[in-house]
Amino acid sequence: MSMTPTTAVDAAATFYRPGPGLRLARSALAAAQRLWPTLAVRAAARLFGTPLPPRWLQRPVRWAAPWQSERWPFEDAALTIHLHAAPADAPLALLVHGWGGQARQLLPLADTLAQQGLRPVLLEMPAHGGTAGSTSNLPQFARAIDYALARLQQRGHRVELLAAHSLGASAAAQAASRGAAIGRLVLLAPPASPHAYTQSFARAFGLSEATRAAMQQVIEAREGVLMQQFEPGAVGARVRVPTLVVHDRGDRVNAFADGQAFAQAIRDARLLATDGLGHRKLLQDPVVLERVAQFAMH
Image 1 (cartoon, rainbow, N blue to C red):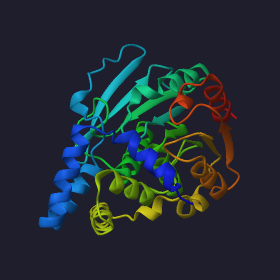
Image 2 (tube, helix red, strand yellow):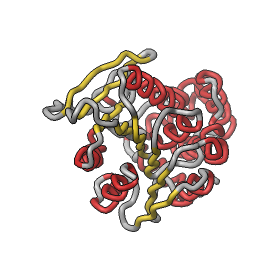
Image 3 (tube, rainbow, N blue to C red):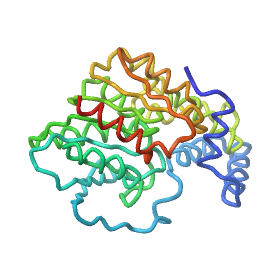
């Protein structure tokens, strides 16, 4: 199951708002498609992997107590880990943001989980928030989750909960399907079809279908994984841990049907449907936070 066409357009509009920058990029890509198609494909792939707003436009954020921050080298960039100063032997809750997001978006959930006795760990991806890097993508998100889990477990920690938002949720589901050592999984507003997002991206930047398809092939060949391998039908049957899916019926970035698809594909998964919260407000809603905390502790 994939996003509807209307939702795909809304998703693109969320990340690529009309303005001089978008018009300039469209014009440059249009010229490249006519004169140098190979360059157009490379440029499109680069732009597709660039989170917006760019990291250099974001103000540095200082993390104060009770948080401790670490930078881990990762691939050609880095990961930032923010650890809550809860009891060192408390089970961990690894929290992951979505595309274009940052770790601070998950602080309300982190605070709620800390009150329930878990030790939150916020993972910030390359090129997001204050973390080094200029590009990223869904396969890298999944690899970063695998790496973070392994590093934390190497230190002797038990990861009771993996909870992730939006694109991070898609990556988390894929990690769980590969046997990630976690106790429970929470998917917050997950997207069901990376392929559909390439289509919405192509529409936003005026790419032909030939350029879009070539861009997708370049990304898949470079990352060594097909986009369809992140879809609910590909990962759901292999997820073996208790799973909660949270999705708003009015989400204009990832359709409610996307969350339903994951809930149906993962055995015995629960679906928490909300109204009026959209794509991001569910990260702050007290009812949602409490339900996630209850799920994590039972």
